[in-house]
Image (cartoon, rainbow, N blue to C red; front, side, top):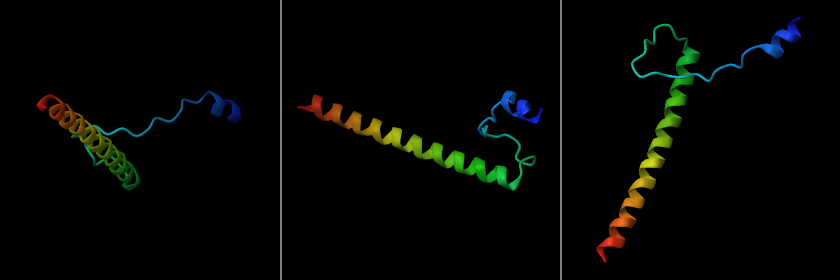
Length: 65
């Protein structure tokens, strides 16, 4: 039956972090996972900001001439 339990088990959810959530219930490992998750999100946000800034600069240069 253990194999069937593995087959029908719910997939593990990725760790999610909600800004302001209590941290006292998280283990050291869970905190490390959250930190990595947030660092990846910061990198994604910075890349989006850079792309938008480049797009805005290109549009400004196009309409300036």
